Image 1 (cartoon, rainbow, N blue to C red):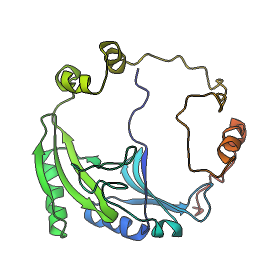
Image 2 (cartoon, rainbow, N blue to C red):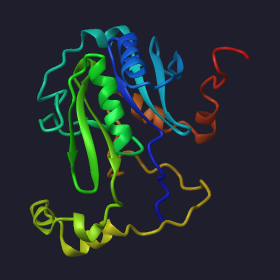
Image 3 (cartoon, rainbow, N blue to C red):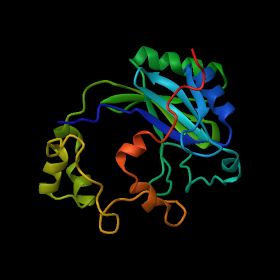
Image 4 (cartoon, one colour):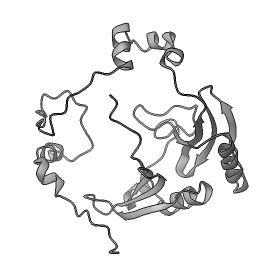
Length: 228
């Protein structure tokens, strides 16, 4: 049973928080719902723009990010058909209700000076494509029909990806997991296959991962910055 029910938030680095907020509110009509000092991260802001009741596009910003260079084809793809480094975000597709809404959003973007390509009919969905600030590659899309595994998993691509029949069966129907009610301990960091979080100072990752879970729960001030 799939226990992942959707996107909670996607956090994107920005050197210009105000420009990102202005774009997503004015051009796309998304509401700013949070902007505060990021929990546990020094001198860093966290901003959230509402997608739905339980999901958001988020931005992370601090002064140092302004000086990190962007390179198309490496840090960013720049469009939904281009390359970027493995593990980086190629493009973001946001969901809209239907074709009428898709065209309405295209009108909104174009009326505000944003060039838009599409709609493109992908069979199971239809999409429009455009750019956001700082070389973001963005898409708006709606589902025309539910994805059917038998129709949309291409045997040729499966073979090229090195996926066996046994592995494909496992990927299509992952094994259930019986909850241990939160009692599974942290694996040994030296022998755990991972993946592991990176870009920490020497020794910091090990120290963080060995903090007791109960203490982590209490580590940050979880009260909102404004009392209401």
